[in-house]
Length: 287
Ligand code: PLP
Image (cartoon, rainbow, N blue to C red; front, side, top):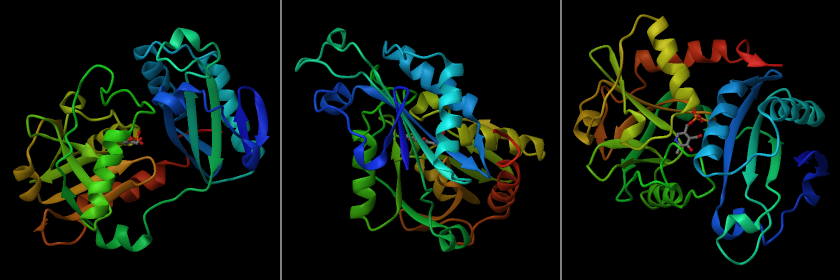
């Protein structure tokens, strides 16, 4: 495997960053997770737009144009010779001094890792996930605004730890007003009487690329989709619940905080969306 580092290719085993990189010292940086399906990089432009918006928000100047990064991603995929892959694109503030000041960091590090995809096991898609809500809240302060896909993922990691401790694979986090926000690394949808609901990002959710694809896909299929805040209660009494994300795609949730959702099996709309989503991923990408 080859890792792209600021224009050069380095072997995976030899790809290292400085301990003085502010990405390491302070979580000062941003990232994207992107999929490659049959040689096509799925929704690359949308991922790059989100990357540049995250950068703009934290005043991080990416030292390449969007077109240059786009080319670099496509080339990195080609060089690694993988038809189906997961890409981790990272931009850190770079090497600096032992103080917070980003002005002391002159060279942002742009890193592209291309690796195998790690998805949920097949049975999980067939049987659905059991999840819980956790005490860690998703907040919307300036720097940790969930719209910024920053390297500062401690909040999400706490959610994941709490999921692990509860013996389940994923957990939901609420915002400080008690509205459902998202999972540790995925967005949530609920279905009630044929209508789909997903929290608006201002509740405290990342504007997921998969979430957007699913909103558009569901509307094309004739469903009404509403971006509206909802509570745990709405999740408990939903007909269907599912999560969306680059790695997970669309995965059903059949049990939340020990409440069985619907009839306890993945619902028909969830399964239809997963099937349609998988039909599109190979045709809707950059080659
Ligand atoms: N929410 C969080 C916190 C995430 O890290 C991710 C993963 O990127 C998502 C949601 C899903 O977003 P996407 O569909 O763009 O992968």
